[in-house]
Image 1 (tube, rainbow, N blue to C red):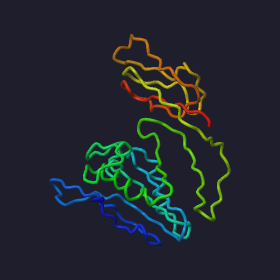
Image 2: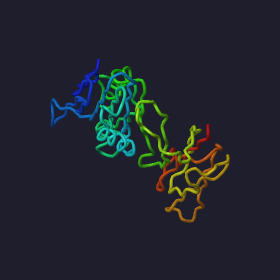
Image 3: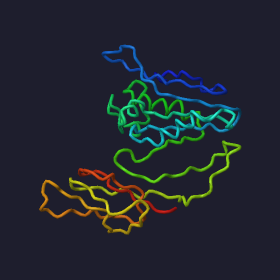
Amino acid sequence: MTNITAEVDLDAEGRQAGYLRVPHSTHDSAYGWIGVPIVCLANGPGPTVLMTGGTHGDEYEGQIAVTRLARELDPSDIRGRLILIPALNAPAAEAGRRCSPIDDGNLNRSFPGNPSGTPTEMIAHYVEEVLLPRSDVLIDLHSGGSSLLYPPTVLHALDMLPDYRPDPAQGTREVQARGSVYAYDPGIFEPFKQIADPVAAGDPLGQIHDPLRPWAEPIEVLSPLAGFLLAKRVPGRVSRGDAVAQIASDI
């Protein structure tokens, strides 16, 4: 049983737009709610696809992509049902933060959620118990946020767009992530490699400088994995435990 109220009927045909009302009682608003925008497009039989962005509020590419689909698609363009939520963790998206400024909740780490918990836990529970059971496919769009850079990737076709003609291939690759590489020392990270560069086990991926001890030698960060560079740290300060790179290999 969810405490979130939907302003749209997920079973109705056509186009609907509104909010998922997440109850949130505060000093300034005793009976207030947080609005998570939702757009639902339905056109006859077919798969139900749930597409979300903004699970992490500082990952903007997915928010833009889902927003554009919500604005540009018409029910007649699809077969089946498309549920679009461009800013799933709405407080985090509004603040441009990875986690919610209301409860410090990381939505991607909050499942299966709690119907009577924090706002982030209530959103996770609604996805888990209301949206996922009625969906055939979930597409949750992520990117590197404010700390990591990733290349764009592509999705498999779902045969949901009857008149769609794919763009010519642009050298995309089907890959699997092998693991992340972490800093063990604080300082400023200087990357050595670019995204998609090949990486051998033991290769230096960058080095960490300590401007507060300019006489000290920089510390190299070596890759324990072989493959290629899938993501790299945005240049700047790092602390022990920060991911500075992610290594992937072709499938």
